[in-house]
Amino acid sequence: MGNQIRISEIFGPTIQGEGVLIGQPTVFVRTGGCDYRCSWCDSLHAVDSQFRDAWQPMDVDAIWADVEHLSGGVPLMVSLSGGNPAIQPLDGLIAHGHQRGYRFALETQGSIARDWFADLDVLVLSPKPPSSGMETDWIALDDCLNKAGTKPQTVLKFVVFDEADYAYAKAASARYPHLPTYLQPGNHTPPPPEAVDAVIDMDGIMSRVHWLVDRVMQDRWFAATVLPQLHVLLWGNKRGV
Amino acid sequence: MGNQIRISEIFGPTIQGEGVLIGQPTVFVRTGGCDYRCSWCDSLHAVDSQFRDAWQPMDVDAIWADVEHLSGGVPLMVSLSGGNPAIQPLDGLIAHGHQRGYRFALETQGSIARDWFADLDVLVLSPKPPSSGMETDWIALDDCLNKAGTKPQTVLKFVVFDEADYAYAKAASARYPHLPTYLQPGNHTPPPPEAVDAVIDMDGIMSRVHWLVDRVMQDRWFAATVLPQLHVLLWGNKRGV
Image (cartoon, rainbow over all chains, first blue to last red; front, side, top):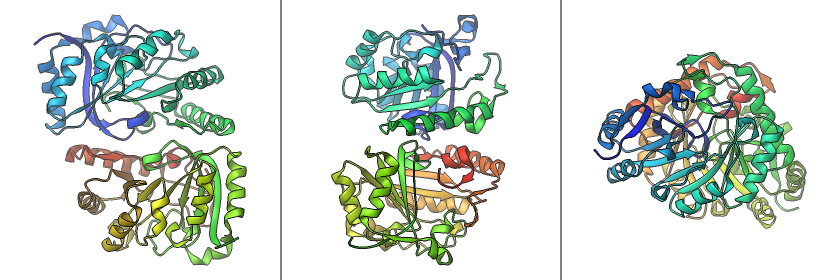
């Protein structure tokens, strides 16, 4: 009951493939809809409104039935992703899961701040670098941090394709020296939204990982953590893993 | 000056490929010598005494000159590995680096406990499962934990090749419910000690990663973190990366 949430997909449990929670068993709740259109978006099926017919309005009870079924009722980390999940009214879902011992991480570009960010366990702010074609709204990003407050573990994650992205990440990280920074090489062959197991240029992805590791080491930016998308290395562009 | 430490290799900075510090820029100080002979050891060049001529006795000043050169004097995480680094007198090195802002992680099977474990920033205890051919001395492992006390972040890491290893990891983890558990699929094609860039069965490694992820999810062991050896996925068996 209550507010409807637009859901693109719910899947798992599998390991988190990115960032601070890498390797942790996770159920993913992917919402539909986004205020951004990144040039290299790897989740267009949850972003582009031409796919909105596949987004199901679900209430908390319906979403929770799926999460509980997938996890066998054993509490774990639930990752709220998208699209931009900050568009959706997720406070009721978080409260419902917390009562049952589940934890919640949310990943967003930081363009829309919500009071309920303070209820999260982990907040991943992933402002988009120049290669995305998007502009960062720093006031909105600051507002996300203010609304989150001190309860969630808050980290920065930057996708890096090239030198301009690297410079952006370094400058943005310097704005928030108290936040851990994760750098993630981009996937220049993201799956088209219609595909569930698209081909991928693994050699190209590997060379981007190697470049970024070398770049960070040469620069002696030792406070940064560099992690590729592990799910891409393990499963390519396959969806739902 | 002071105690000599037997060094097999010092290399980096590169990203840590395993466990709790995965992705973090790290300089590796690998000591020579081990009280174990794991069947699948991937660092035999630092273990088997037939290679001891390649292990250099170095004092703290000499080791530190290398670490400082590699890191350009910018503090970062130093990983003390081996062999079993607990054999060596590393307290002076840790104190020396701490004064300069560096941090220290040590990885050991937990067969030898040292008072100076309490000086570490991170202690990775990696007791060896049945496939190694080794027997775990639980009293020594408990002693490692007691000596470490509460200052280091202490975690468990288990290499898992098969069902027997999995059962071992699960039982061992249950002995220490307060310690985070990391599961790591094994490399069944470890480099021979003479090789610096040996061939590797990447398909076989991938299938072991997939098996372990599935196994943990089916078992709903959601407190475990599953991480492959990222350096193996990125660089194969190449040494020094």
